[in-house]
Length: 348
Image 1: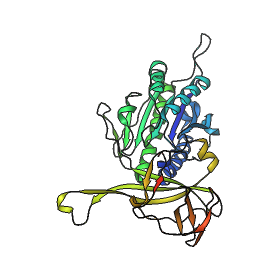
Image 2: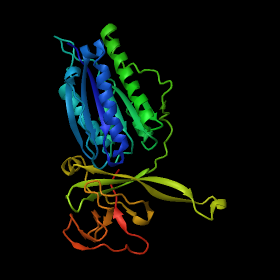
Image 3: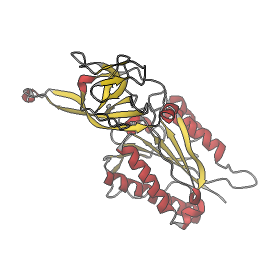
Image 4: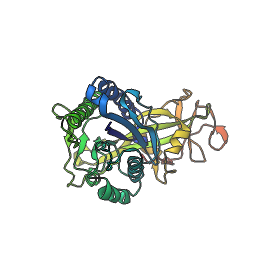
């Protein structure tokens, strides 16, 4: 049987924590449920999921559709696109059947790459490898989740670069229905006509647009993410802030804008999985004066989820005493330095 391999290459960097990664998990479940009702897809489709942050990890090898169960997505630090592409290409070489003199191989793999950020590694060697050995043998669709992905760079990989303009629940649902329809159409095409170029569904009524990758996109850092550890449970969590630009009170007429970061939420993460997908500690910082809002600890409920120890790490506190789960230092909670403190931020 000739298989139609479907790969999902998913960015699970820190900026995806919270609602975006939840929407992707829900979307994957809906895709699989819907595809299982389609006889053409059941006959041909095999699914694999690869997650990447600073490192890449195979969450599910190529699996027959009726046996596939969508995985839970982890979170890691960094956005190593080059690492992800090499991991994908290695897996295609290993897992996809090639045509030989004795038998027909699998259909062209279809890859959906979801990302919301810019690479934190050097992806150019992997892009060169893709262009030389894989570009004509695979169908790749790159989707920018929001405005922060480097779509000009993604254009070196494929002509199919799309942007999901809104990332609310409705837009994600409509988007994943579009992904499902595209897979269904492609499975019919390979079965009935033998044509193995991807057949993308119409994008009417979806907050999805094709990107002109010849234009250099404006790259902006939309989020600041902090890694914390619960002082009671010793479990790790991420605190996510969204960038906002607004008027300075009293200077509105001058058009001078101020930039700060507003709290989105705090989210527990599995430390071992997070570290396995991260590319090391960031060397970049953000001043606490730029952060607006303090979350409660998502692990124990302590009132203050962003407390900075003298060792420079983030922990939680009940507002009175604190014992740092990073370095073991104990003490009383006090006010920060005038002008704020610079703390290490995640790679996003």
